[in-house]
Length: 260
Image 1 (tube, rainbow, N blue to C red):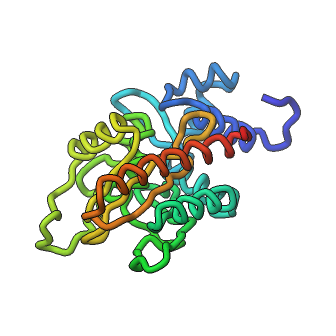
Image 2 (cartoon, rainbow, N blue to C red):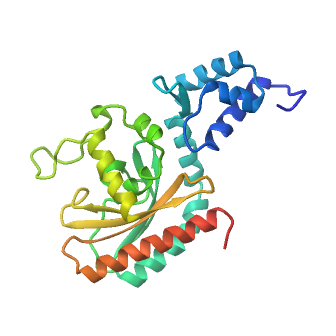
Image 3 (tube, one colour):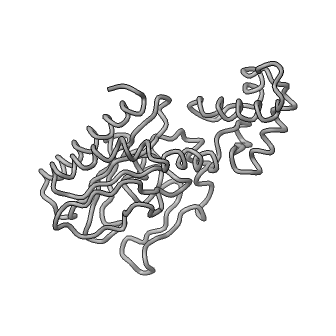
């Protein structure tokens, strides 16, 4: 730690958050104390306060700590201040022009996705994915693409039980099957195997989407880009949509890392 700080607790708290953000998954408190050269008792005290405020989650079975939902909200807050939207909007617009289908960019906001960019294709129906709209992440292509990039412990912290799954479908609708952590893991395993995420009629009946994650320099999901099209679209359009979102997401990943 920097000597002579006038507010050591603030410095140590920020150092712990920065350290957790740099890890691929949750870590033990002792590891944090050793890495930052902070007394272990101080680390435990600060972690307890951050846990109460939602910036840190404790995984008791693993005796580890990871970033909490409030930390994700800070990240999303940065995104809402335009850098991701400004860098991503031209890519989404070019994708929409090329495919003739609507596209969007979203970020993870707790267990929801928050849409930052919406580019509507001419003569295409209005979508619910407008700028500022939030939808349950596990139901959307953008959400699934980002959730698939999270470490298992962080994913479990977001979805600790069935109550964490917001059911969006009207009661009695055909696809209103009950969600569980096991079902989510199977869906995300398919996403990782393919390298892109799909959604078919789970947000809006008759429409499907393909999405791909934008990752930062640590491999964390910073955003996702998706294209929405009729669920009876020709195979050729679906293939071009998948190729397009993957290319756009890869380009934006390079740009937020400062790589052309």
